[in-house]
Length: 204
Image (cartoon, rainbow, N blue to C red; front, side):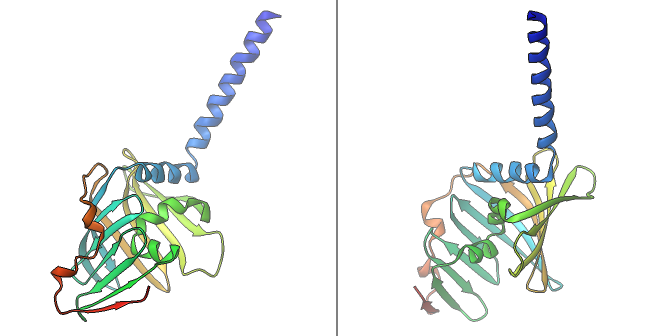
């Protein structure tokens, strides 16, 4: 009887380990693993290239918790946890408002990684050393139609995101990513003094 109980216990453990091993390889679990790594980061800094409509621009990102600052030569965005400021270089105008969740994600694509429950996740063929996940919204009618996420298979960190939204495809290639950066608290507030003479519209 004792041997029977022991054997049953061992078989139960094997079944449990097998279940965990299989579930860890599912696309949804892989996406959650990436999201967890990003979510646990003390401070994120990244350099990226954004390509859309045949044009490319380099930029940088600083992020800590819900706050972030995304800077490019053409436009820059600051979010301090409550208000968002977007500055456009061509018009020398800055607009301040309280953003919605979708507006935050459109401004900082890493936020999409924390919204896994809103998407169906499937695997796609990738190159050597990468995993590719395709996210499609569970609900129809939204602006985002799909997100193609390329992940470093060793680090489980994002390498690129291809977002199809509003009839336009935008690719963000991450050239450098650090999850342990120390970031000054003022980095997420619009530095008004650096932009003298610009037009500021406050919609809050």
